[in-house]
Image (cartoon, rainbow, N blue to C red; front, side, top):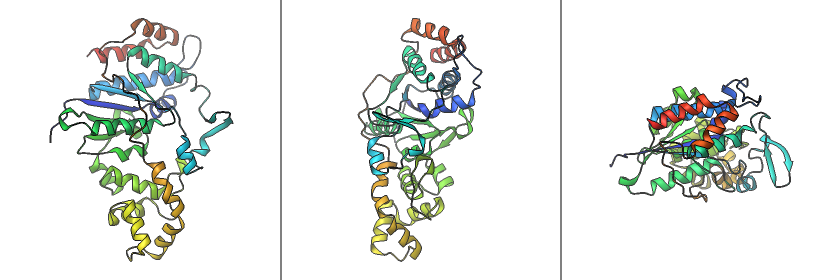
Length: 316
C-alpha cells in the first residue's frame, strides 16, 4: 500500500467553536467589550492542531444549513429540539446570544489568513466533510493524502477507514488530548470494525441529541451485536424479513414495528458523499493572504496574541 505523503485536516468548525465558546471564559473580550472567547479559542485550537499534526492542507468545514430539509422531511424530529424560533425561510438554531456575533468574525479571520472555509447550500458541515473524504478516496493511492477529521461529533466516526488513511481526532478530552479513532478503536469501544458498521449501529441505536429515535429497546450493545452477527443493517433487515431464528421474538417485533423509521433513517444518519462542495485551494498557507486585513481584525477584536500564534505556526 502506498503511504500518503501529505495530510488533510478537516475541521468540523461549529463543533470546535462551540467547544471554544464554552471552554474559554466570556471575560475574553474585544476592546469595545464584545466577547471574542469563541474566536480566540478557535484560533488557538488551529494553532495547536497545525503544530501537532503538520498538515499540508486544511479546510474549515461550515454548516450552510444545520438542519437540512431532506433530513427533516425523512424524520421531522431531526434536531427539532434545537430550534430557537420559526422565521420565514427556515428554522433558527438556538445559539447563545454572545456566540452568534462571533461566527462572522471567525469567517473574516479565516479569510484573511487564507484558510479554506467551505460549506454547501442545503447541507451540514458533516456532509462537506463526507464529500471531501469521498473525493480524496477516489484519487489514486499515490495521489491520496491521509485525512484527520477534527470533531466532537460521534456521527463522523462512520468515515473511519484505515485503508484510505481516514481517522477521526475526537475532542472529547480536548484539543491537547485528542482521542484517535481508527478501526481498532471502533472495535475496542463500540464492537464494530468499520465506519459503515458504526453508521449501521447508530441507525439502530438512535441519538436523542439529534432527535433520532432509533429502534425502541435496542441500545448500543444490542445494535453492535446485531451488526456483528448479520454484517450490516441491510443484513439485519433481510434477517427480519426472513424471520431469522437468530433474532429473538422481541427483537423481531421491534424491528418490524420500526420498519418505517428504518426505511428512512440511513439517509439521515449517513453523511452525504456528493454534496455540492466547491473545489478550492486548500493548501495550508505559509503566510496570510491578506496581512493588512488580518492586522485590522486583530486590532479591532483584540486577537493579536492568538493571531500571532497561528502566523508563527504557519511560518514553521
